Image (cartoon, rainbow, N blue to C red; front, side, top):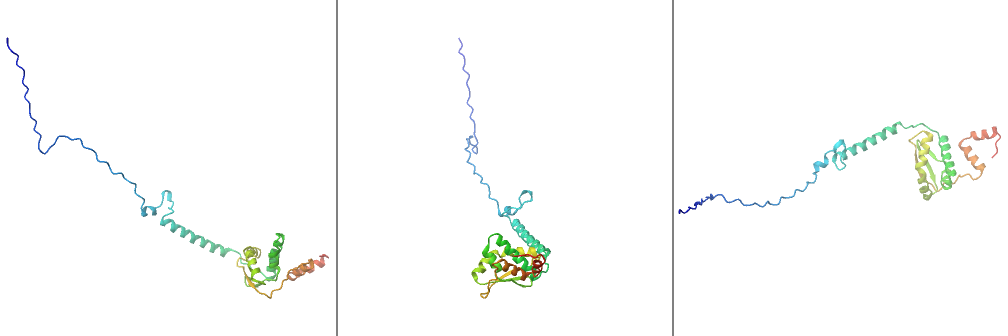
Length: 203
């Protein structure tokens, strides 16, 4: 009986070049995180979308300066167009005491008395009012802006200014009785006496 021969498997050697090494799993190195960069100065200077100027930009500063200059120019132009009509001392006194009447209606007796204490003087478009002491001057200064605006509007002259001076020799001319008030107004406008006689009016 013949014996079966077992096939012989020859081992083949695999030669690996020296400059090569078996594949080795590589570990990925952690990537460096990227931090968003802050906007640069040049970026702040650029205009925003839609044509608007950034508040922090140099362009906005220039724009604000140009706007301020334009507003000043407009004010100068408007001042040239405001009325500067001539007025007389009588017209001034009429409006002066009309304002005093308004103060009386509002119950501002002290301010009314300061206006009536004497007649203001006029030098060009400057109205000069004398008061007896510094305290009364300080009180009057509070009412000054509204009084000047009133006179400018009523007399149609926007160059009117008002100066307050202290004169201790000033004596009050405030009228207390109806006759005093009439006499005071008659000093301002003598036509009142004619009207009183024509209509046979009594005080």
